[in-house]
Length: 187
Image (cartoon, rainbow, N blue to C red; front, side, top):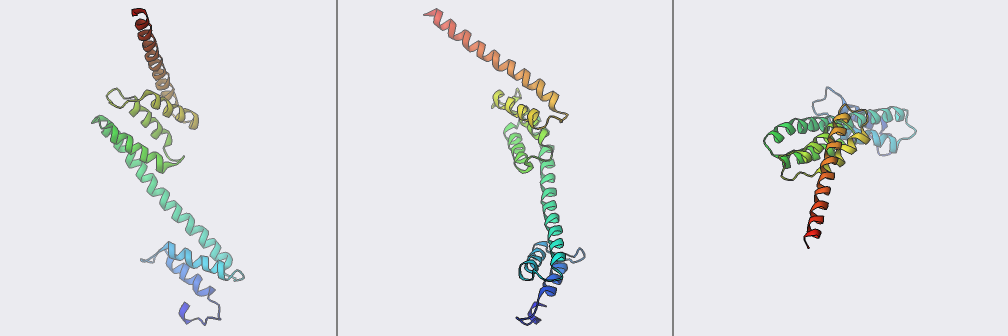
């Protein structure tokens, strides 16, 4: 279509049609990225075109569709990661469980199932069989869940864990102070 139009002629209709062809749901070779480029050309090259607002609407819809597809992929990945967590913890593969949840955290942003991800990471750091357990980090993740997602059904459990881990950390500090006093008295 574009090659048939004289360089001095208007190609807005051809560009618009190419955009709709590339975005049509029945087109087996549908390509939203190409469609977007054609609609952008209409907007850029033909601001006075009667198709301008139509191209703008198509561009908005296609961008929304493409973003939704990315979100769906991310949500699917997050769900897959979360499903792996229990099995990994059961097999004492804490490093992999942490990695999987860190990946879920990175692709979730501040969205889907963040409270669960933060809770899982807190549990992984607190797990008694985890050779790399870190109560301070665990407390930080529980605190983040409590602060950022106060409506989460996991908040009460996170508070209990946080309180318990704070008691353990204080107990460790008391033990250290007692050992120091014993050493001072032994001199």
